[in-house]
Length: 119
Image (cartoon, rainbow, N blue to C red; front, side, top):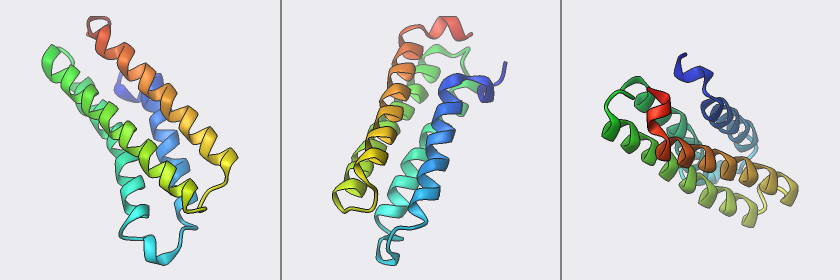
């Protein structure tokens, strides 16, 4: 099984794409700030999962990359809060995206605690 088959990867990729689509409507003055940051952090989750999974036989490397993915996921939550507070997304969208991100975080933590099941 490849990393693209992992449920956590699929959810993280879907979240990153949802954020990308939503952020297309953000004001132009945010393009190099909030828009770039929320896109970058959400995409980093997917990249770290793929990198770690490729080298999963090296336990500490695998756990380190999953931790990096979890950090990127947490950062995404912060940027989503800014998106909501700046009124670029509505409350329902914010709640849906945040819940998805929290679910991704729980899955990443499960993988970090049970890394041997993924070797």
